[in-house]
Length: 174
Image 1: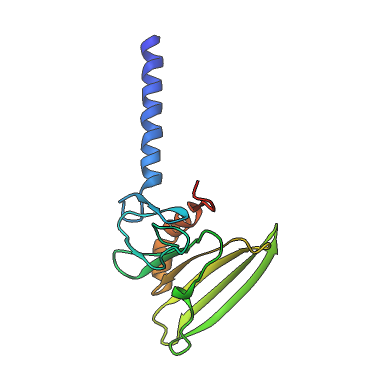
Image 2 (image 1 turned 60 degrees about the horizontal axis):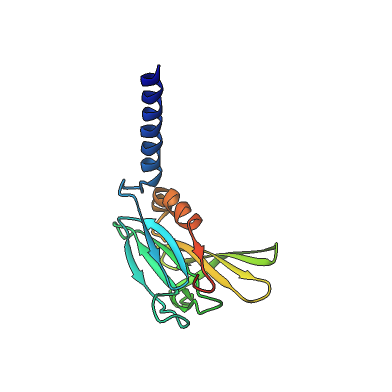
């Protein structure tokens, strides 16, 4: 009986570990990595290339915004999470080549969330962002995805949702 209980516990442990590994696997089965920004941590698919963008103005080390590019180059995740408020110039619309195609603002629970979509005028890509600002003006962050086409968005959607849900912010560096 003792052996049967031990065997059951062992099998349960193996199943739990296997499900954890499956949950941690990215679209290409490579898992996820932790990126540590100046004031945030975020998980991204292991096969993606990290492209830091805006250096932190309030920390000696790290970046406030970063791009994460898929192995095929068709999708790009973005995060900007400065200590308090900062510049998002790295995702500013280029009026010559881009147009804003959608925007929605929601206000609730002490914050304003603006969802906006920008598309290339030649149809080569779409960028979608969520810009969150605390009503007291103390903090803001932007998270988003750029994709070449709907098929590419669909392919990486689950990875993007994990990326988005993994954001941890540190306003005072603790």
